[in-house]
Length: 226
Image (cartoon, rainbow, N blue to C red; front, side, top):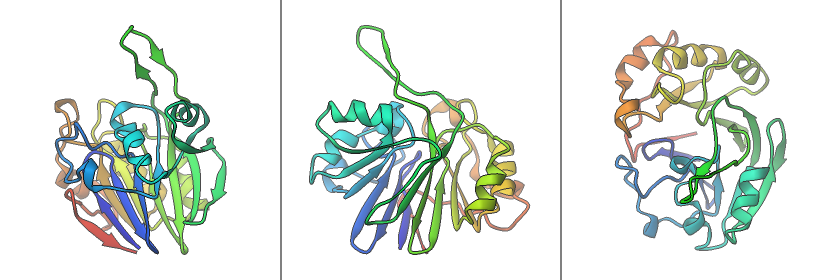
């Protein structure tokens, strides 16, 4: 299984011929190496309903009727856009043909602003536990630090954890380093930083805060094998 990082919170998993994209924010993402016209995922996993995470989901999903997995409210919104969805919610898991997905808590906001100055509520934010062939990837989404991360790590041994470090909208480096300790993942990768001025961070500083020697800085396009 090949896992690659593509700027902001975009993660791609390639396993047994299936292409899975997490939070495919491509257009408008100045850090990504991806181009929408070159991507054709089989599955899209979404953590929550903000534009920098929904991103190009609708266009990408319609290329080959990709399955989009999201919380119930966000999935309903995407149903209205003509997208093939699977509805879930926090605490629930489902065994798909590509692997198992479980939604975990994440402490953040959600919703899209309309042209007439309304906010469309799109359900509670979530993290993602993705287990494929016995290997588990944790994508925390946008979240604050919370103590139940220890419970997540204890109950679901994690091979690689993608944690936001940008601060301002999510955990900052110090809290993310503590989260890494609670999760006890084999590898920890910082995400959600440097895309916009308010979330400017030095990933090297974050890596130095980790008590275990398990931090991996992934530049857009970098990959690891599990």
